[in-house]
Image 1 (cartoon, rainbow, N blue to C red):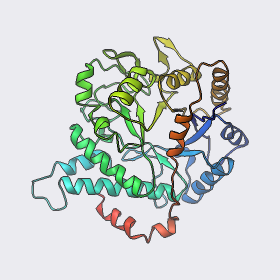
Image 2: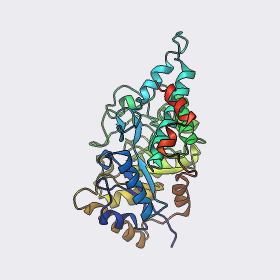
Image 3: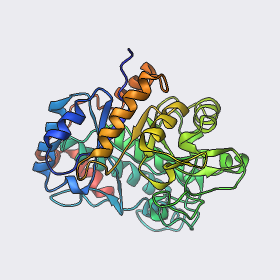
Image 4: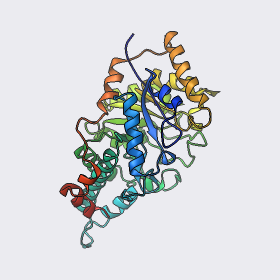
Length: 360
């Protein structure tokens, strides 16, 4: 049987329970996603991440740590990073004569933000952040809002590439999201099923353009829980047309594809039917996702996490999804390849100190 560990799950608290350890040791578990509830201090976070790695060294420890309002760790020395819209605003000062502003200042600040973000996370044992947001700032989406760099896909691509450069300098992979674009629709896929009725041509020339331009830069992509009915009746994360025909073949992306949270409302209805977490995971894997993400289900008795692990194993035994060596290689490629700097050493590291000075 081919080894493939596609599930990224969460843990309930600031330390591992016996149930957490059992779930993390499961061969279908490939990673852990952390939240603010898993945070108390830097020392505690390092103990937690070390405990996770003690269960399995190859587990990918992830977090949503973008800057602005989506930043899980903010105290005990962590730099509060600006929202990405602030970098787009800095770009828009180009040619207006303001010292320390303009396109070059914005790209430098984006690289600095990526370097600071990754260096601080890695010093606490976190491997990977789900960033950057590549959605365009169309102005109507409250869930995206200031998480987006800009409305112009060219500016988004250049600032995202600069941010990714900083992340990679600090030894961290990254994830462009939410393919092919979540910024045009007002509905929030956490609580609704957004529908974007534009044509494929319109989406490709605007929202999806950064993915084509950054195909050689991005190490992972997260598809949106948005339905684009002129392309496919399924949300993008469950659509072979979006993931295989368009993202892989037409746009040439060959990195990891990671589903968005399968507990979100936008993931719970597929082909008009209410889907269980397991059914959603199988649909995502069948469509071409390498990894599937299930968040906030370890709270309480964690029954949903156990049901997902059992359900995925049963679906595999029935041949409903096939373990993929290519997918497993893509997962492992997201793990850091270098040792991080310890926090105390980082505070005196010249590249980190210079990056702090460049932040807006």
